[in-house]
Image (cartoon, rainbow, N blue to C red; front, side, top):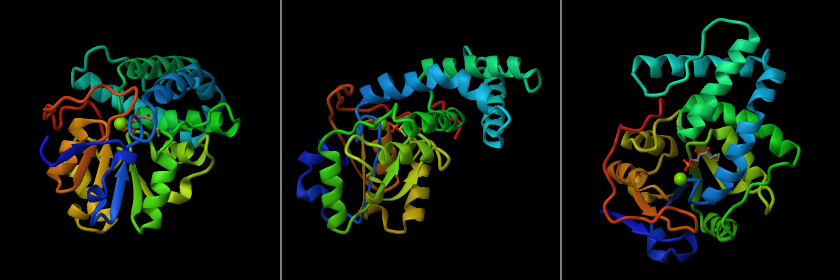
Length: 260
Ligand SMILES: CSCCC(=O)C(=O)COP(=O)(O)O
Ligand SMILES: [Mg+2]
């Protein structure tokens, strides 16, 4: 785990942030309990996917979401992905919705981080946040720590598998209020897979500071390794509810199933 350190955000020694001009945070398992994602966000998406698609079927946005899922299912099939639920390109509204719902449920059972799934989930969660059914949970150190870091002149970014819209909904609707003003920008898998070092190189270009002045915080060793390979500093966070960190992460760059 060369170049990586394990800490929670509030345990971070000043040296971890020394010379840092940009901080990038992951969401699930880093700023936000895995339990909130798995027990609130994911069930909401799963329970509401059918009614959402039925209500919004003719919207341009929904048609784009369906097209992205159809294309992904066809690619999964061609790639021989085990258990893939196919979605016909043509058919009645009812047939297409049924296939999309089955595909989404299969992908969610596999906890896939595909861009097509994450885009649709974000659109479903929008309603839940708007009606107040969902309020985002953060670890209690996150708001104060990020506030202090921003006051010290560090720009804060998010890089999560959740879509940029889902990220903004989450930080805009936390139990502590709207925290969006703390963030300079947001990145999702449209820039690339989180386990691929090329994604971090692209983020460095967008942020416009040198990689060694950027610190990436995540709960996932393979993501920290990918960021380190791109020259960023990275640290693994230990959080309640996370899997125990082991000393040697597997280097599985490029093996993730994400289609980004
Ligand atoms: C915008 S939060 C939604 C959480 C989510 O869908 C997810 O896959 C979280 O992954 P992360 O990269 O933040 O660990
Ligand atoms: Mg994470």
